[in-house]
Amino acid sequence: MAGTAHAAGTLGAAAASSGRYFGAAVAASHLGESAYASTFDTEFNAVTPENEMKWDATEPSRGSFSFGSADQIVSNAQAHGMKIRGHTLVWHSQLPSWVGNLSASDLQSAMDNHITQVMTHFKGKIYAWDVVNEAFADGASGQHRSSPFQDKLGNGFIEHAFRTARSVDPDAKLCYNDYNIENWTDAKTQGVYNMVKDFKSRGVPIDCVGFQSHFGSSGPPAGFATTLANFASLGVDVQLTELDIAQAPASAYTSTVQACLSVARCTGITVWGVTDKYSWRSGDTPLLFDGNYGKKAAYTAVLNALNAGGATTPPTTPPTSPPTTPPTTPPTTPPPTSGPVCAASYAVTNSWAGGYQIEVTVKSTGTAALSAWTVLWNQPADQTVSQMWNAVQGTNGSLTTAHNTSYNGSVAPGASTTFGYLANSADAPASTLPMSCTIS
Ligand code: 9MR
Image (cartoon, rainbow, N blue to C red):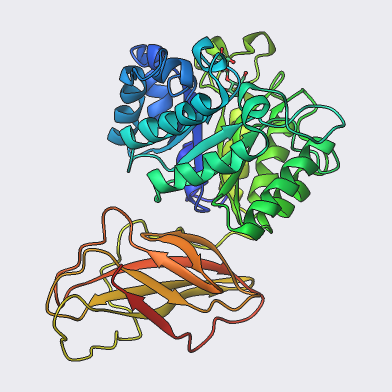
């Protein structure tokens, strides 16, 4: 907490104290500059490639893919245990001209192929993808903007992109990302909100909304926290994905960070660059480090705000690896049946006003190893799951489901694995919550 000996000394560690990440956009070409690399590696625990995963970088001519500079950023991030945001699969800008010249049916297959090839290349490494970027128009219309995708494929291109993305990498969170959607009453904000609401109601796979947060010197609009909370209540995570503020006033940075901290499902913040020197709007000196990598007043303000934590955030960071302590409710152990069989049981590992944390044990109870598993349960409607780790959240009819990730689907006979989740709830967690387990 702020003012105590336990306050974290870096942005990433301070954000992690409330279960969040703090990232920066980086350019591969600067990673060889030692001050740049050491500032980035020390202070941040997440990264977004600023340009290296965009269409013009990854598929400059049709069907020929290049990932070299993106791979450089990814391997640096992995070496430092950072989360990686993939940016971006479908965007009207930085789009090579060949894409705009295709017929509708060719464009559809080129878009599908682009999503498939790029996501497959990075599969298992990406925390969240900006599947579609900036598809809404500025101004009062609240409608989609004109683009080759919109003009040739119609409104459905966004839904199609998300469905394709889910089928390629079911473990990555899928985000819609845009700018000027931070003020709740703006037509553009409402347009995006209505799209996300429609997607959730029809089961179109979307997990998160990115608010770019490129602000003028007065910082975020007054209702920013309301906007974040309203989107989160649709059942998506929200993230600040490209934060920078003209002249970087400390107070504007503080209120921006506090808006995220006030929403339990605001999972992290990314600033759009490490140093003013390389900012896309460097004349505005909008970042946390000056051109000589000196910490600005805004840096200290952000660090303090992150260390102060969020009122509605869980008190502990969810574990990222299975804890070694056994669950307090022993798993049920039926006699071994032939073939792969699984059983699920759960324990409440933490609770606080407004929420609780659950750990689920998936046990392999048959005679053959599991290669995949899904746990299903009936989550009470007023107790929404807000975060899950070591499993991928989904639905099956009215049931909530948790499917294994790429790294914990295989479970030997007699062995078990665990996953966890947080729920927002005014009530205590259910003392009995029947869970079933299937082997697919
Ligand atoms: O910061 C990026 C800059 O280096 C590029 O020249 C520019 C090209 O359009 O894109 C910048 O990043 C943008 C991001 O990808 C999407 N949101 C707006 C960002 C700032 O323009």
